[in-house]
Length: 506
Image (tube, rainbow, N blue to C red; front, side, top):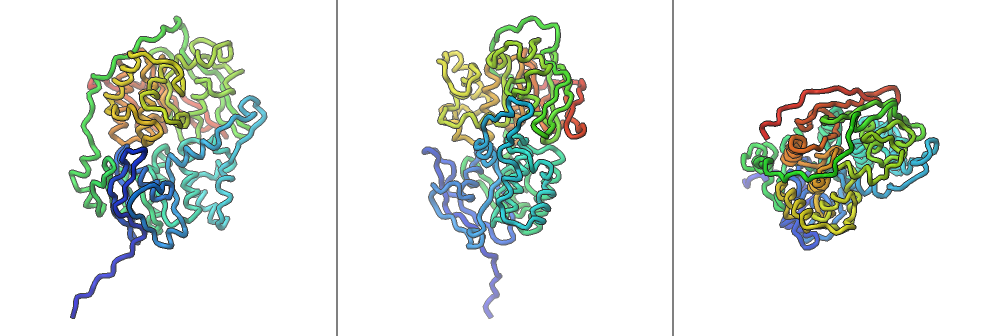
């Protein structure tokens, strides 16, 4: 008798020799793999490996590729949903506008609310409420998407994707932007989705992020499929895991900091807020905030998603009109006492969670970095050779000088973040404000950024304000903690001093 052939599971999707170049630059080269029924795949790779390019092809956002991409009729009919920073960026970009609430305390236009975003999806109301509750966004349903945090936006996009019941969900670094509690619940939800046989492709940057119940892994390296196979075999492969762990850089070779204009003599704190509160319509965001930031301090601001961290920064940096009329002093001056926005910007270097939105045109990476000298989004002033050389030195030490002539918006999200951090550092600001600076980065680049921040703190007069979701990831130079805590229907803060960790090893 002839041998009985085993019955193979059908392919849900398959790629054969798929390649893609963006503006004549190869992003993917001859990628071939397939997902069969019952398999849960992870795409693993560092910043710039090609994960986002692959996701764009699989989701249908990009059709300008060569090779073959096939879907089963079921998946094709139900569609593909993606949860990514790019989706969040596009959504926020459409909502960016000024409304009367920016100037009038009692008026408020939320724009598109979370409820508005989810309402068009045809699904049983009870099931919709179940997923909204599980994901943890019930309390923000009536909040405008312009006014939710980065982590909350990730949750909203996940809810939107699940409620559509697609044939495939692509999750691009789902844990980024979430606080510790939200990460834990999201991991549990991810395992539940796998148990329920949802077809998922999870994009991760390091082996630690690979879901425990995933079955297969493919590794991308510079647009090439480095390895693929069963999860346990890949994770036990020393060559595969070492690819994710590059050697540390020498931070003693960082460029020297530039001399900046000296600040007037200060007898009091650099920043002070007294009984500051912020309300948007019915939503109380901040309540009775009191904080002093003095010379020699490096502050870590932390708290859960949606607590008001970014709102607090906008009050300080001059981006929020609700700062005026409150007791907020910047370098001894009461906010609204005659300083211009440029007076404020001159003293600060800044990386925010949405700064990438401002660099949407074909501006070269080196130009983006140099614009940091002038506190502008575009490059409207002639820069000198010294400024150009200084910017190049920063790019070289971060090992991304190869992107100096690349259009900023052609780069991956993580590389863009690195460049914006360099942009904030080049002018040696009095205060460097970093709002979730490692968002979208792999572990290697996170380490680089944190050590670079410590170098700045140790070797210059620049003071650091570092914002994150938890105590788990921060530079060692921190000697002040500002912790957001719930207070009724809003948040207030507690401030404490902390012992700085040794920086001698750098």
